[in-house]
Image (cartoon, rainbow, N blue to C red):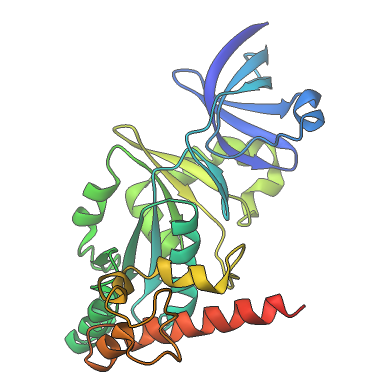
Length: 295
């Protein structure tokens, strides 16, 4: 029995599929001591496995190497950044859901790139509105059309040498983008499907793909709702970077930028320097957290 180091590419039904460079994909179970310690292996974990059968590619995970970063939503390890994809149309972007995702990533200290797909079916003024909504938010924003292969080189440059979480709701072209960057994605997961047939149709599990040049993409399940977690209402404003340059000019220290007089953020909003969409989403999150505190 020999030991080897690899990366968990997928976890399903109590099995973990570990890629060992030069050897391939091993189907592994986690040793019982992890459960006793309250530790659960995550997709993206670098692990040591004991090889039980090299021909059938079977093994046991015996240790998990230290994580550089661990996300709870989605539950993945060792990520450098996230790429969140929304459609410019069909479906129209859900800005509230996008802003909640951005806040969630900021809470977890993960830099995020915003990517709007399907720009081939919208006009220039609609693209401009998307741009203006997020241009002062501190996020990198990309506009692409996977169908026409426009803007994809710029996105690829942002991914090189990093491990990126690919996220977004259903129907926005996330799978198409993954297939563009990893043309043999179905081939990579083929061995998983061979070993465990129900894996073939499973879309509710995170999975990692090797793109090349030390570049990995996590494919995560589509999300439809996110709640603001573990924040006081006073903290939410700190996650809206476009507020920061104005809030020191507010009359009151700790101004919430809602009801207070002489609020520089509300003044900037009225002057069009802050997106009304983003501001309204901020108000909704504050209201939601206030409602949670009443229970």
